[in-house]
Image (cartoon, rainbow, N blue to C red; front, side):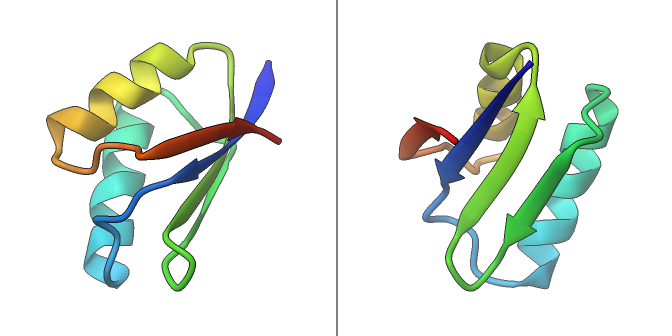
Length: 68
């Protein structure tokens, strides 16, 4: 598993956080944290491509991704 720091400029409020949380849980992700103020998702996952695809599907495409 790798840990990622993901910048998602479309995050604006707690509703955004809720949508992303629900989407990540749908694909089985459990180890993540969302910082609305900084527009960041911190996630530990074995399949980041799947996470990225899901985020794009719900209109929250990642702009920058760094291994954390």
